[in-house]
Length: 165
Image (cartoon, rainbow, N blue to C red; front, side):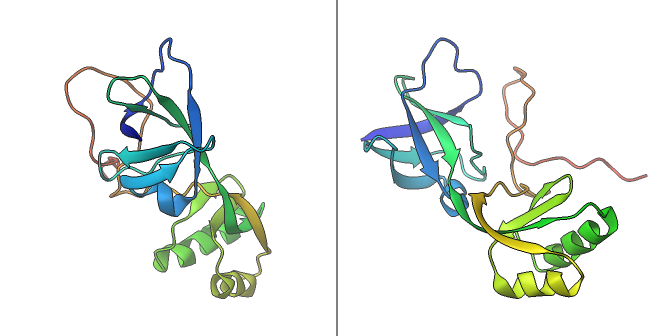
């Protein structure tokens, strides 16, 4: 079995040797047995507290295997709205219920829940049930991969919010 222990930001000259398609509930786990898309068995033994994102690269300890993570389509509810006020109201109410939420310009997406769909319809929004990859916000107290690189010997365990004056 392949044991994937590292996140890779720069693959260098290594070619991707496989893919693994995972739903969001699997991508939040740091320890998990998975089947790669080509049928090989693998295990995730990753640092805790990081949500895997579609497109991320994982490697085994010696770098012999480079695996790309794909976000699986799953049952989601999607709200598309050009009115930023209505979208903000929807995000507020979903946030009050601690719902993991994907936020994009003009779009909110969450794991399908007919009760939440009805709540948003009651606010005047249109909600569509779809199958799509789900990439929720990491949140202020969760770790999230970020794109800058540096060599000062540590990673950042939390997303840092700007201080309020």
